[in-house]
Image (tube, rainbow, N blue to C red; front, side):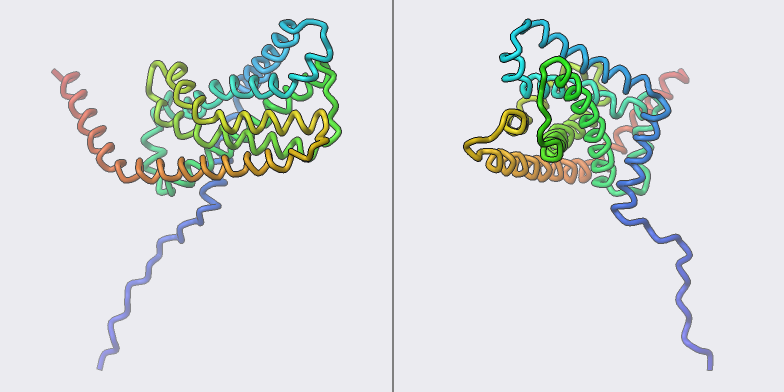
Length: 260
């Protein structure tokens, strides 16, 4: 008697985990930034210009500069974030690889988190540059660098997470630089306010012990924004097949028109 039929062996390589996919997208974006340093230099120059403009607007009043240094720092970061986020999908759009990125067998959440972490790291870098400029111009005192770096990271993540989603939604719009701030700024007002207050308390002292409350608020806002963006991505992922069918039909029609 012949033995039972053996099942076919699945020789496909195992699918990488979600963390490996996130690291792959993160490595890709950071490698692109490293190879083309023009955008990094432009963003750093932009942040430096904003900090200098605030210094010239206030004048030689050192007390006023120190009192409002945290607000100037986060206004600079918020303004630079629009340029950073608008360009986060620029390489894919210019090379026509945006649809290819979506068709890669990666989890949609992995693409989002990889892009969001990359944008957060870039934004924290801009904030650190602004911080050092503030030390020189505003005479800021960095007595607690560790907690200050944590606030910069939390605030940057709170801006970059929803900003990455909106940057993807507006990637193909000709007026992206106008639409993106209109969508993003109202959503990140709580994050910006909490980050400004926490940064100010770290720079000037916390005699009333309010720092922990503002840090808790910053963490809660980040968690809420992360949950909201996750829900948006899942909803978009459900509509993705319909979008791809529409895109294929649109390309077929455009090719037929060119053939005529």
